[in-house]
Amino acid sequence: MILRPLRDTADDLADVQRITTAAFAAPGVPPEPPPAPARQARLDALHRHFVRHDPDGSLIAYDASGALGAVVASRRESVWGLSLLVVAPEAQGKGVGRALLDRALAYGEGCARGIISGSLDPRAARAYWAAGFALHPAIRLEGALDPARLPTPGGPLSEGGDPDFLDAVDRQVRGGAHGPDHAELLRDCRLLTVDAADGRGYCFIDMSLPDKVELMGLCATTDAVAARLLTAALRDVPAGRNVKISNVTAEQRWAVDIALTAGLQPEPGGYLCLRGMRPPVGFVPTGKYL
Image (cartoon, rainbow, N blue to C red):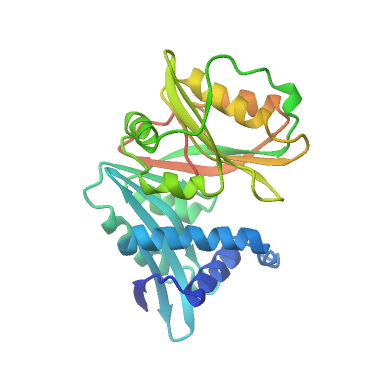
């Protein structure tokens, strides 16, 4: 088996998507069809972003039979994040995932904090636990939205925000700025910000795809500001659209209350795996940019 850097080529991107689709398919259930063109373009842009900014954390595993697995990890100041770790079903249990994870962890050496959005796979959870991460059970809130159920958010709120402001909130809440990730999110997401006496924060929500609206990150210094941002973001979603919010833990009751009020349904969402960090309160990480 050979591990090499993930390249910004159509072949590598196709291999990553093929492995990802197969790896997350339920046992005995045929894999889902390929993503729609708009979503595939979004996934390709995401991988290109990390290949460009984290070449030493973006790797693919090969042998004579072809691509076996892939990993994408990022470093943003003192925060390391695992954005993707997938192994083809036929290669699972053969050390491929372990080799990829070890290389990704080595890329984060020296980072004081680490974040992983872990799936329900018990093998992955055990591997992250063995790497020193605390496992915090998370829920996913998803379903057809009824924004009319939500109250008018109280307090000041703005559209858009300065990158320096976003990074400052990141450093205060999660211990490190997202830096170039914010510009990538702004390509497709709406950005709401709060800079007020009761706290500061921001929220990215993606409403650009026809099949699903997704919260793409929320970071706030207080739970009151976090609740204001999420309420405002969801109130602007057309009624009936499918909405997804991931990585919500027990500490974020404000997010659960808002989502359930708006008609979303809670489901097991795997684990938010943290190292060197307390469970977040005003911070909802994404599965990719974390």
